[in-house]
Image 1 (cartoon, rainbow, N blue to C red):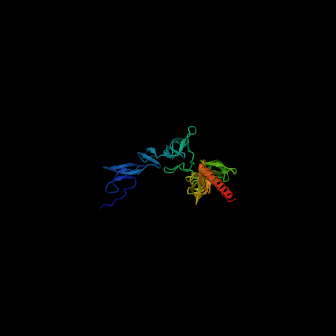
Image 2 (cartoon, one colour):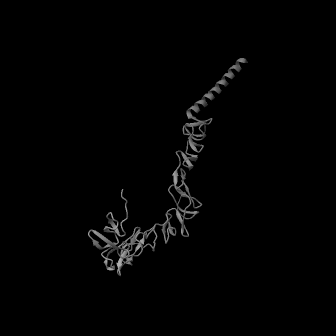
Image 3 (cartoon, one colour):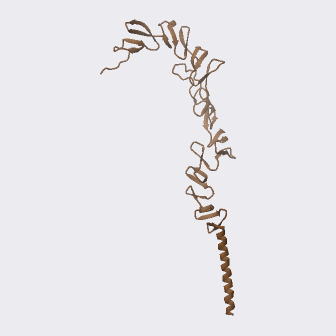
Length: 292
């Protein structure tokens, strides 16, 4: 089995002999030939294609360079192509051409790296995710992203459920399903709880208020808290301490010994008790008179 060897420097394609070059690499030119083979020599620095080693032989510079004074010179930082040091034609990634100055400016969320003049150097690296805008470095913030506030040059996280804030103790606006309280902080409205992402999530079914997705601390009507979950009260009960201890019944029902009964049944029972009392009294009078 044969072994693969690198072609000589400047050669992009060669035969079995690494020195027998068929084609030159980018940045090199054919200085001489012998049959189908070529000798490859380097163009001037930063030249992508050239016809000879003469500085005037450069036909195209690498991106981010322009040809002037018999050499390839670097464009201003942020330029992808340019006609001079002060005239960009197109911009690098994350940059936009200023029509007045003819220079490239970094988009919001990116900062200008003035030293990035090399082909593979990024002229507009991203700011830290906490920054909306930054200057000179990713963590030198000049404004903050949503839910952060500026503390000197660092963006700090706002207090829980704040959408925007001016400090760690003063919210300006709240996230969805939260409201500002008297202490200038945000609380989730009833039926919602704050999650790990500092957003307000819906409480479990039948919860009035909750501490988390799995723990209720109050319930809706007709339910009571039992081990952090909301359990149904007894039949027709609007408020209860347990499934067998009702406090308030629904319309048309009366409370009897912790349970809800139809109002007509209660009335019937009352009538029955009254009738029984009357019968007992009548019978008592009757037997009393017979004994006299």
